[in-house]
Amino acid sequence: MHLTAVFIFILVSKIQSQQASSPDTEDTEYVSELKQLRGYLLRKFMQTLPEIVKSWMNFKKDQGLILTPDQNRKYFFVYGKMKLFIEEFMANTNRPFEVGENSLTHLDREQYFKTAGFVQSYSEEPNIQLHAEESPTSNLKAIPVYVDWRAKGHVNSVRDQGNCGSCYAFAATNVVESHRSIKYGKLEVLSEQSIVDCSYKFGNYQCNGGNYEYTFTYLKKYPFPLSSTYPYNEQPNTCRLYEDPRKAIVKDFKSVPSGDEHNLAFTTSKSGPIAIAFDVKDPAFQSFKSGVYTSTYCSTTLLNHAMTVVGVGEKPRPHFIVRNSWSPSWGMGGYINVEKNGRNVCGIATYAFYPIV
Image (cartoon, rainbow, N blue to C red; front, side, top):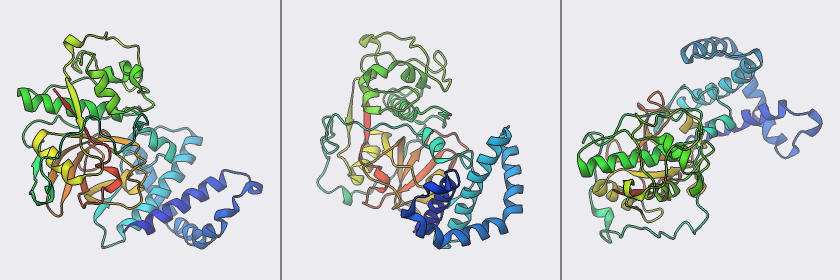
């Protein structure tokens, strides 16, 4: 669907990598691939260079970037690569969604993946669900499902994890907030920072990634303070909480049968928002703007980012409404619609959990 644009993105990345290495160490395995498009890419880049330079200057101003000369050279090339990808993608009139520039456009792949931070659990096989919710029916496909928990007032505004790989903490916090709001009628703003600081003994790695299953296990034993008393600051700190199950607000947690989109949709409608993991390596995800996202350039098992399903929509075609933690400037006010097509796009239904509060 958008594989041509992705292919160009990959080849430009390889050219960048090759330019950074010694000519004597060139990887001969992909030389033939590079030669196929190198001339086209370089001509296109040079033809649009004045436009790219102008756009880069405007981008730096809009994003408030203050860079050293070395940083400017590095980020300019990355920005130009992503701009080329965006133009190629948007040239496809059959595109299912739109992409564009955002606060992540100038980040290289290593920096981009630092904005993710989901660490998969290897303690059990992915298809074994120790806390699995029983399927409510044997034919979930026949049940029409539509829900938007935002419209019901049970979802807080989108927040920003910043330069900390704490998506797992945001996903867990989001679903606990929503499930408490659904049950008790009060929407609180809870502390992601307390999870970053205090859950490392349960398998999380503070700003270097974590897992919401580990987080729910932690939250069964520790208090979950309000953000106003334990604010977020994008870095790991000394934990300021002590184990006290009497003050814990998470009683237990459940999971949706792995890979089952229809069960994920039904459980979202029946129970509330659900924490999910996703493979975000597709550059089109990084630059997503609007529409219903779908991709084959991603895995359904190798997942690297945690988000929250907050609803299920039917138009313009069936999709999940997914909340990210990359600020409202990303996507559709911080959200992305992911196609619900029975193929488990990018692993959206592979590892889905929600709390019992």
